[in-house]
Length: 370
Image (tube, rainbow, N blue to C red):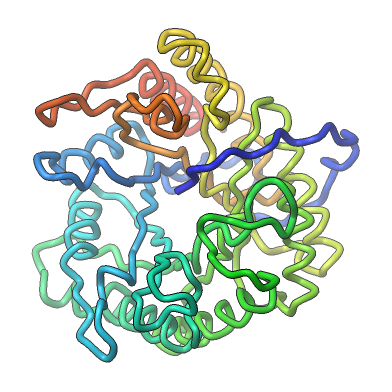
C-alpha cells in the first residue's frame, strides 16, 4: 500500500546483522511456497479486470500468499449497520480457487467511527469499533467462518493471520506523519490501544490466529522501539516491515536492526514478515525512462529477494511479499505505479513485464534450494 517518498537508509555497521533468531525450519529445509507473496491492489479490482485470472497469475509465479486490503470504510458505511462482505468475499474466493493463502491488511475507518470524520485513514475514535469489524472478519473467514460453510465447493483456506493497519508512521522520522494514519497526536499510544483491542477480538474468535503489526517503514527499528515503550510487547505475533531503500544491501540491514531492537525488548523469537518490498521507491528513479527502470527493477529484485530468503534463519524472516502485482506504469509522479510485476493496458489487457519473469525465476530457484 505504500504510496510515498521515503528517505534512503543510512549506512550501518555490518555487525548489526550478526543476530540470533529462532525459526521453524533448519536452513537446509526447502522453503514453503507460502514464504513468497505478492500484494494485490487496484487496478486488479477495476471493472473489466478478472480477479480470478490475476490470482491464478500470482500462483503461477510460484508464490503461495497474497496480501489484500480489507477496507472497513466500504464494508460498514453506517453505524451499527451490517457488514458488507461483497468485496472481501470475491477476493478470498478467488485466492482460494488459485491455491493462495491470504494475509489481510485491515484498514480505513468509516466517517461514523473516525476520530477525524472524512479522513479514510483516521484512526477510530473508539478502538472497540474497529475490533468489532475485525471480529466479524474472523467469524467470516477464520477456521469456523461462515464463508467456508456457505461455499463448500471452494478449497477451504481459512485466514489465520490478520494485519492491524498499515504504516502508521511515514518514512522520514521514526514518529513522522503518515498518509495512512491521520492524527496530529503522537501515534504510538493510539496505535497500541488499537492493537490491543484488535488482538483481543481476533483471539476471542480464533485463539490460534496470529496478529501482525502494522507495516513499518523508514527507520523502522526506532519506530518499533517507540511502540515497545508504549506497551506493544505481547500484543502481536509478527512484525511487519516495508524496507523501501534504493540500495539492495540496506534491505537486509534494516531487517537486522529491527531484529536487534526485538531482541533488546525480549522478542527474539517473534518472526519478521517483509510484507512489502519493491523498487522503485523514489520518484527521481523514474527519470531513467521506462526501459532503464525495468532493467534496474529486475536487477534489484534478483539481488534482494534471494538475500532475504537465505537470511531467514539468521534474522527470523517468516515471509517476503513483493509490492505489487499489477500497475498501469503511467503516472510520472508516482513511482509505485511502476512497481508491478505485470502491466494493465487499455481494454483490460494484462501484459507480463520483464520483472515477472525475474520474480518467477528467483522464486523457483529459492524454492528448489536445500
